[in-house]
Each structure stands twice: as C-alpha cells, then as structure tokens.
Length: 188
Image (cartoon, rainbow, N blue to C red; front, side, top):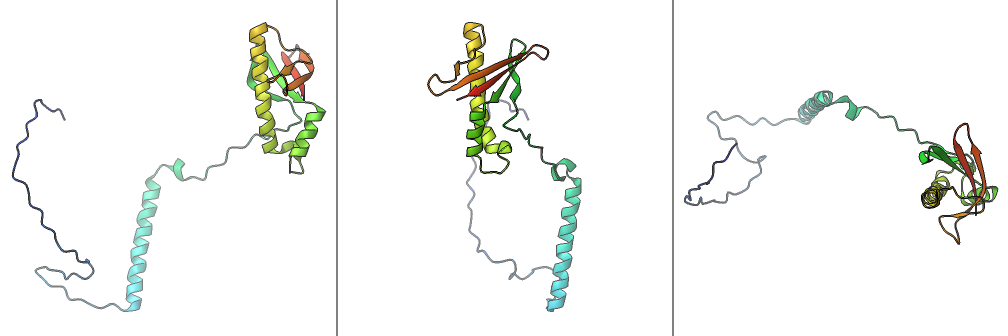
C-alpha cells in the first residue's frame, strides 16, 4: 500500500477502557434465547466423549502431517562418517602445490605415540586421535605451502615444519611422477 505524504492524523477523544471481572468459562452460565438444560454426564459417557475428542485431534494432526513436505518427516539416513586410519597417508584434494598432490605419513615413532594416546583396542581408527593428529598435519601442509611460496622449492629431508623447536621433522620424502604425488613421512 502506497502512502501519500504528508500523512495526517486526526486526534479523537480517548477511549475509556473499563476493566471487566474475570470468570472462568467453565462456571459461566450460557445466556441465549433458548436455555439449554444441563445434563450431568456419567463417567463412562465422559470418557467416551473425551476419547472421541482425542481421536478427532489425532485425525486432524495426521491430516496436517500428510499435507507437509515429505522431506521434513522422513527418517533421514545419517551421512556416513569417513573412517580414516592413522596408518594410511593423510591427503586432501586441496593439498596441491603446482599440480603436485602432497601427502603426509607418520613415522613409526609417531604411530607409537598415537597408539599410547588411544583408549580403543583398534587404536588406528580412533577418531579423536586421528582428528588431533590431522590438525597438526594440516599445519604441516601450511608450512610446506608457505615454504614453497617463499623459496620456490619444497622442503628437504631433515627440515622441521610449523615450529623450529618442537615441530615435526621430515624423515623421508618420496616422489611419484606418474600420479604427480609427493609423500612426506613425518617424525618428531
């Protein structure tokens, strides 16, 4: 609706609001032209009326649910969690440097630390340990990427990544020219 300026309002006399006494609708008498006689209900009549009332409410609820989009109420299958093993190479599609895919593996020493951290019998599939070590490995990739941006070469064996004092050291580096993959084996 379009409003035309200037808007003009007329000031009228204020309305006087009077409070009305509250009374429960259950105890009010019905005032109509034809008075309705009050018929007391027995317990069985009351329960049958209440059951019919509940049934009607349930039916209306079912009709409403059927009119809703199906995708909201269908049982959704949970998205499968990617189970990664800590002994497998860590790799992501985003981890590339000049069309070369970068992968990281853990040395035997780091795998022993991971086994000690895990409380599960299959320690190599413990999601908490894998998430912890994956965060460190992602920092290693950031270090590799920044190293390459600064020096235009990749780090060599013996270089420490992400922290000079406590960071992980590159124990081994393998290059696969067919798949254009560089795999760094990390050690502490």
